[in-house]
Amino acid sequence: MTIRALVWNENRHEQTNALVRQLYPQGIHGEIAAALEEAGGISVGTATLDEPEHGLTVEKLKNTDVLLWWGHTAHGEVKDEIVQRVQERVWEGMGLIVLHSGHFSKIFKRLMGTPCALSWREAGEVERLWVLNKNHPIAEGLPEYFEIEHEEMYGEPFTVPEPMETLFISWFEGGEVFRSGLTYQRGAGKIFYFRPGHEAYPTYHNATVRKVLGNAVKWAYNPATAWKRVNEAPNTPHDKAPVPLEVKGPRLHEDGEEGYR
Image (cartoon, rainbow, N blue to C red; front, top):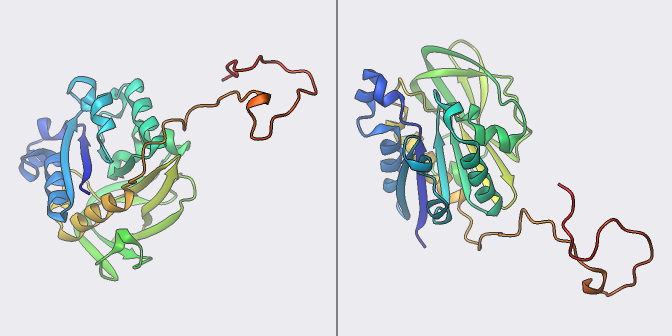
């Protein structure tokens, strides 16, 4: 079955910065989409911040298996109701891949429940990413480590929850290290945070980075039917229990009445 991926990008740096526009003439989203098409077995669409509903309509998200998110300068412009919409789809089983400065996006911070803060520096340093588990699907076909010639430094501490697994650790020329590939699950949805991708460098042209993106989409894909009741909290009457029983004490709610939220 073909995986339906959607690449979301705020698409602001490409409009205002000549260097970014030169590196990514089709937008960062366009380059990531091209990388996914190379991976095979993935159909790819794109969406950007300035489209109606940020390009993330109910219908489009319903038909998305894995969403990739790149944002940086306009996190605050993403409407809260759209963030909630994306979060609910992740709970239902849609995969989410958060890229680079998307660590400060509303959707990632909401799903993590932590500040998601870190230290950083723009100096065009070499980044060496060490692969910690070569048997993981996201690391399939990767060498022991790979390097990116020029990247923005992110440094620990990275204030995120303990992940299910740390797949990559980065070392930078200045001496800092960073957990650059982290997996999570929220509800039925798998989440992967991948650090590389600063807009001023051609990171998404790097063949190994592109391979990681394709692997990650395939890992995050959940073939199961959407878990539509994941956000429900039904009041199950006593006589509808698997073993029907009698009410033996006082209660605040009538049968079928909504609970407090």
